[in-house]
Image 1 (cartoon, rainbow, N blue to C red):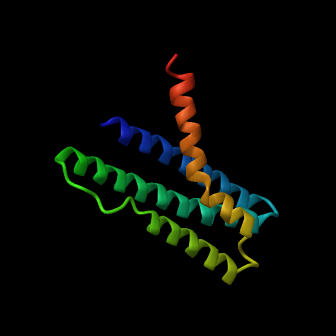
Image 2 (cartoon, rainbow, N blue to C red):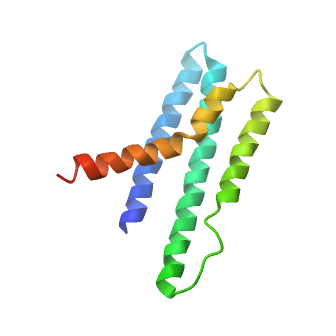
Length: 124
């Protein structure tokens, strides 16, 4: 498996771990709207991570073949974020807005933490 795919698999595992933690928080605490917002945001963030990994893989294949790629899917990822905010604004009693925004940023935080752990701590 190429290094990019192993990196994506590692990040996906961390995202599922966080989602399971958020589900436990939703089920066992009184802060259900906060954890539900984190679940919504992180789920869509995981979808965005998958979209980004798929687009980068296609970009790499096109570059190897000498073709060009139209875009890396920024519009799709922004539309997913807009969808999360629309759902949150439609059901404000169920979802905490700040939690949804933090959840949407989760994949980027996981990517940065994964980068630092792989490059700074493991490659000494």
